[in-house]
Length: 188
Image 1 (cartoon, rainbow, N blue to C red):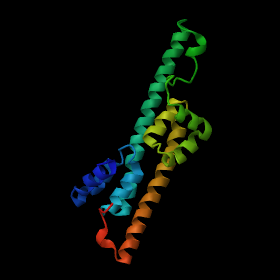
Image 2 (image 1 turned 90 degrees about the vertical axis):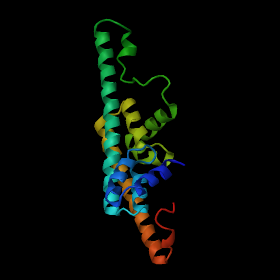
Image 3 (image 1 turned 120 degrees about the vertical axis):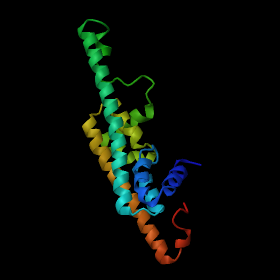
Image 4 (image 1 turned 30 degrees about the horizontal axis):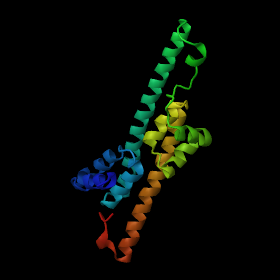
């Protein structure tokens, strides 16, 4: 069983009145995120008018928490290094660099970040299996500003979640009109 099956079973197993909350909680899961949560919500019968916004809000909240946690940690490390240099401890060149990513940092993420920038990683990341839960904090860790990363992460989350939710709702509506509703919802 994978994340999507488990998440779908979780949401569909809740009472109808709590399924929107289930969609919200499922949007916290990396690789499911807002898009998957909206898809699951619509497929189990939650109105797209509820599933999409709660999936967006849940995904944005968890990505923001991760981005700001990494940003705060990065700022604390830089502050500590600068105070050590000011006190005359340690080499000046190495300690004042803004690049505090560990030497073993994922080279692919760094390469994508340098090639695509924050907007590119945020908007193209889901296409190359780089979820916002990973991409946002990684970009901040590589030196991007928290506000700029969050702006593009919110744009990406909204665009992909709305498109996925509306596409699912449209396909379910089409299937219902075509007479194949016996296999929906919960067939995926």
